[in-house]
Image (cartoon, rainbow, N blue to C red; front, side):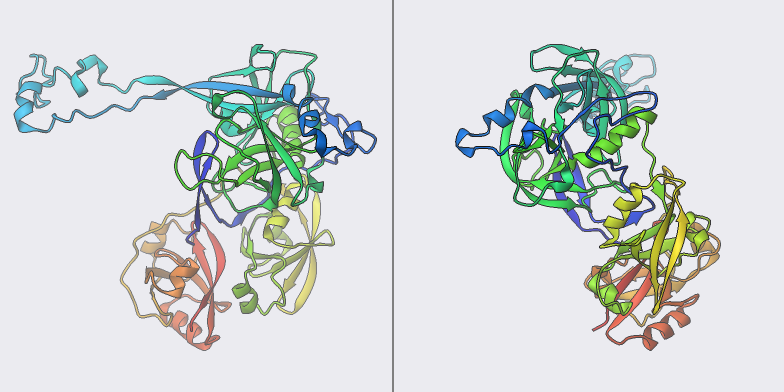
Length: 527
């Protein structure tokens, strides 16, 4: 379905934000705030965790300013510089296609003013020789920030700060420079762990981001614009921000939003509370223009999530996630009305992988998941995060509403696969009359199914055109989508589709739509 795009510019990199449906499992493990050793097995990282007896819990006097809070943490925030080799863009010769100038540069086939070796263009692009016409490589440099989390040199930062880097250097507060080893990275949460060969370092104290509330004072520490270490102050504007898709489709998000200034180079730096405890890793900013700086909308990864990711990266070198094998989507007011639901709580099952954990346990399309292990599910993003906190192989209890019936289903989670299944769109067939305003459809033939790359059991009608001014377009219906159900009735032909539309609610039609390899429900007003 069509996505709502929000302009965003991350520190050091541009990215688009869109609202997307959840796939399978969710963000990584959560670890309790107590205890001082976060990582075990083959490697361990001794971290400092604040507790009620810590001096850091004492009240701060605002008359003294924030210096007493910030000063102990400044040495724990470092500058990270990276480099990698990229292909240089080759500029085209602006005169190469001009007939007058081609008599001097040659026509490329040896018939023009070449050098006698059949090259025809003795100068190459922009006057270069033949041996220089291949794309050249150049070194690309970038800067970011990181947070020392242990006295023996483990550093937490953003994945996009070190992604693809062939050389990573860390500069400490005392100007010492170390070459860093990349321990592991997780693109789906934009986190990475580095290690430098140093000891007796100043490590930051971990706080509990679950206690962070809207309105709390926070401070962002980093190295923006490569001007040196900088501290900015603001408040927590929101918590639990999701659906931003900063790291693309399949990303897992639960951001703290803040108006503390976060600019290019702040990525990977620390977001601390007024007790000096780390509550987030600065990651992204929302901006209205390319190359812009902070506009008061910044995002940080909660430290509770970051600790879980760090644990897996250090211990296993990768992150594993729980997997239900379903596509879930939010219960919008329109969908709640179409499903005769009293509230918009819970997660709507839009698609089920037949041989996945939930499919084997009996979960169906159209089910509403209202609880997990006996606790209510507020929305589909909450369910994704909760599933992620459960290791693969563990059994969970899903509370499900199916029409008027309620039941509990036991599901043993699998491990989330790396690559979701997708299907391509097609221009699709001849239009046919449709009972849904602004939509033209055609019966799904074997040829069209082959073009779409559909599974053999797929049935329905193909959308061949959508009027962009229609309610269907506004709801996200696109050409190439396959409508499998209308008002909870399966359709296999245009006639069945039209009858189902006419027989349904005159104010709204509920469609089950196959798009990009998965199905989801769409409610379209008809009046």
